[in-house]
Length: 448
Image (cartoon, rainbow, N blue to C red; front, side, top):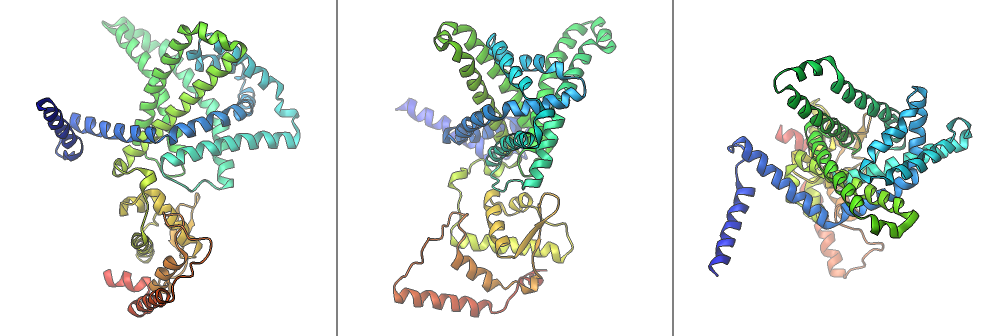
């Protein structure tokens, strides 16, 4: 009993230290440790929910279908720069954790790529090739949007522009980073540093560090680019650094497993390479999604204690959110301030991003707001603020329902008892009488 009370007491102290410590007053190492443990808690909770694992499995299937067209397009780009002979060594290096099985896998993949002649596919064949790659990238984007609680995907024109730029630029960046790594290990400066006392140890340390930094920046680029929202550089790099470390550990684990399980793998015979590749893909996608979650919670610590599946709005909260959105958007428009974006307004109101996105969709359908700009991120009133009647907004929220913020409108009208119908009618009349013709402009002017 004494031991149990002792454990409970220690557990309570740890809980208070983790969640109640004032980070502003804490020293640097405490802030780093506490924030890291809080993010770890949130990521483990997401893993236990199972959605990240399910999405990683889905991406394995998508990758298997589209990886050859993706590599074929990249191969054609590299061929134009005379770098196509470097594709096979790069694949072998990337799959080094699969051991000797990587030679069979890469040989088969290169055979498929050689069979795809981009120049002789014709218009239909090339269109199908592009479509399969765009479809793969879109599914990847949706998975990253899930980690960022974003439900709005890029529109079709944005997909073609953004995805194709990655497809054509990424291979060149990969080989550029490899060239930088090689030159860093063989340059004149490196030779001079090695000649200094303890210079060899320093060069060895830097040589070990550079691949991690390059991988971290590569993953950071993915985390900044793929989610359909604005991701800041530091959170993206933190997620990328975590991903790079876990990726290296994953590679070591898989290579150790493959090396020590030769007899078990032999049971699958010719299918062994495929099974190992799919396991590697699953682990890789899961690690990438975990890194995306780390970036999200680093940028949005207010959601660490909130489970995304349990966040919903009741009727009163829906009305409060709708009017708050209209008020802030109208205020900035009236004062000629910069237009709001969804993530900024979510942070301002302290509301989960996907709930703000859902309500903005609802208001956009009702023609109260409009999204403009290059990526449709800037939000403006869709009509003059003196034409937006508050009582009308409230009535539409009550009558139509917001079926994407936890409240689902029934497929058929509820008949209801006559007494209840009269009661609700009186309630609508009271709202109309109380607010009358009060507009959004009246509220803005009354407070500013």
